[in-house]
Length: 404
Figure: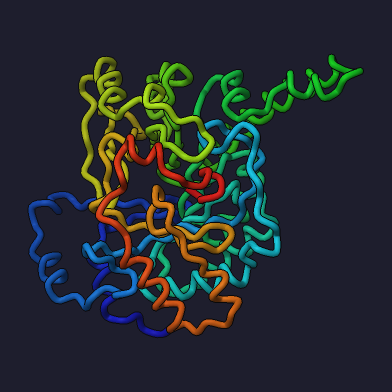
């Protein structure tokens, strides 16, 4: 294998040390006393070669993390993700092909991207997702391949995905109550009953069966990930007042005996999801609720570019995190870029500006031309998003089309 560029080796040395679970899934760990002994790390920072200029914005943020949406389609219709009436999906011919995805991924990794997360829609409904993971795994310099999934198909596909090189998993689960799962996911037995007409009883029973099986499949996927050694298994929960904010303690209780990172996400505005400030439960409010139950809850150290504020109850196997995009943004250390399923580069989740890499690819653009286009888009990235109330008034695509 060819030697890595010195700059990449130095950047890798700067990151927290990594230990492996039995699956080989990487888990960031800080060495004892690491915070007290920064000499070698400081030396490397001062002597490291410059990070890619194309992936560095005008505020000095270095983007080493790329999220790629594999599809706009999903087998759920979650309330916070898309409008009730659904969305107009992009014609198949206008979506990135597998080869186009891999061409772009290869280009970004050559420039210093070392983490790719596959998103959707629901990425696990894409027929060639296992092959995509396997081919990404062959890219030299790519340290982490993650996926964000609703978990419905996870238990069935995870053994193949793990063998292909999948190293990190985020599973969306917004409730531990099956009836709420039905409501949030908009997969209702009564809707099936109305459509069935002359066989309401059978249709309702089918809807209830889907409800039970759907929730069960997500839980099965979580336990399969634990069984295969992923550590921690991240569970994403979007918290909405009056819907699931009464389950915070139940979610944290799961971390007592399971290696989970339960991540409470503040409710965020996207087109059509009827975001309302009154529905949003802030990080501080959630934290106060947890402290009342577990006053010994302790904050853990995190990487500079992390979007999560992480805590653990002493003695618990897992941990709990908060994604505070609304009440306490982390724009200053953002290292993320996004490619939508239709091939647009999005430098900020809450920005409406997008650049079509697909169009330039199909027009025959060279690597150098693509890099100039990418560099120009990254260079236009703003210091921070417009703020909680302003972004709720801004035009943005539904989250399912962004690959949030």
